[in-house]
Amino acid sequence: MIPKFCLATIRSMSLGRTTFFAFTLLVVACRPSVLSVRDPVLVPVQPLPPALAAAPPSSAERPVSPLLPVAPDAVPPFATLGNTSGPTPKLRDGARRALASKWTARVGKTTFRTTMALEAGNVVIGTHGDSLQGTNEASDAVYVIEGKSGRIIRRIATPGTGDKDVGGIAIDAGFVVFSTDNGQIVKAKLADGSIAWTTKLGGKLRPAPALGDLDGTGANDIIVGDERGVLHALDGDTGKPLWTRDTGSNAYDAAGFIAAAAIADLDKDGRDDVVAGARDGNLVAYRGKDGEEIWRHEGDSGIHASPSLVDLDGDGRMEILASWSYSRIMILDAPTGAVRWEQTLEQDAGGIEGLFGSPVPIPRRAPAKGAIVQATAWWGGKRGGRQRKDGVVDGVVLAGQDGRIFRTNEGRVSSTAIVMDIDDDGNWEAIVGTESGELVALSLELGTRTPLARLGGAIEAAAFAADVDGDGSYELLVASNDGVLTCFTTGSRTKPLIARFRGTSAANRGDLGAIALGWENEPPGEDRDAAPEVEDN
Image (cartoon, rainbow, N blue to C red; front, side, top):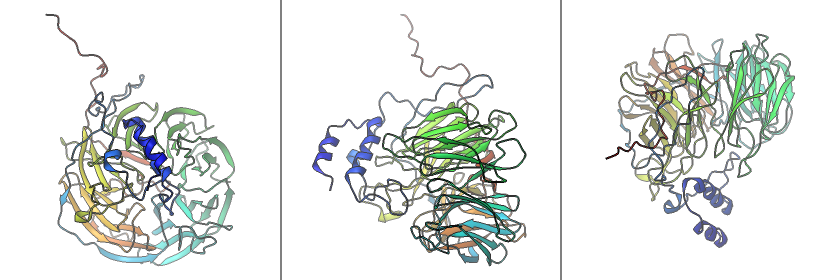
């Protein structure tokens, strides 16, 4: 039940787009049972009433803007916010294809922040061990697993005491760098598990570390944010601090880092720079050598999804692909932070979409346009006839340049998709796991959803496509929250477009490379805000 004083406040509110977000948090604050026990993120167990949850677009809003062009010497205007509404076509069922399991390994629980890599023929994954809340668990570790057989070669345990869960890993020339819930960054040698160094920071370190050459020495340094909202840059050889930057809290007092950073040389000074988003809603680019701010974009909700770098229009200039937890997807020019495109997702039955997995581009054969694959995880619900009575259900949305193209109702999906041609037919599929434990392939080209496997627990971590046995075909590694890592054979010999969480780099840089979507640029000089001309009669 919602207390009467809250209902009175709700009735007094105008449910426009701006006040809707405040309303959502008000309902969450008024219901003490809504906190998820597995993660400190405000996620309602029960939905808002549909009549209140829907945030209809303002009559002043226009359709979604095209991708705005960026001249090297000019910053484009902001794209007009679009908020598509109405029913979204559903992906039709494809022929079921059951993947065969090659091996399994018991590694422990994982989250949507978990990362995997293949190094020297071995699979590397960091986990939360036997439980998400336990302390001093020996199972909290980085696991090194023989790719051919699934045999666990070694466990690199988190040093110290307390909550020793591993947030995520990155690989650096034979070493693994990992973040921990007891506030440490650890660098260890993969060959024997020996610890090179450990640096104690403040607060839990939930995101996976990202690696890049920040100081121009030619060696990788480390970027990670903590739950207090401090972004840390560390020397990769010693673990000593290079610089720190504080972030704030948003209107709802949410603070800290959940998302991993993206790394690229934005200002062309020969040093990598950093793009990081925090729960205060700010996406900020920092100069790698000293942490000075390059640009900032202030959002209207927190950032839990890790941003990525990608060239979406083939002009050789990188864009930032990012999403905010309350419905917003955005493409920004990486060097300047100028908004080139944005879209506000919305449930067909009304209400926000909760975005925790990272948005991912998926192309189509020319001249068809590609789309952005975005998982949603807010309302719950289930697939098929077992949906909630109000019709509100989470799943995956495929958002095109002009609005939503497809959706598939799955229940909560917090995993980030990868993109591969799983059957070598020349069409790209988005491979994504659901919290109901199903692994599915989504084809934008064919408009289909194909079930691939049913696992024994929720799938939150992004899948990983790799040739683990060196036979020239790709396997799929999928972690589920019954604590099992499963290696599936696919038979695919086509190199994946996006093989792992945010790209192909085991350094977790978030660089997707060039993936052209075929979206049109707005003609130069066009003023979208100009009033229409009226002829004199």
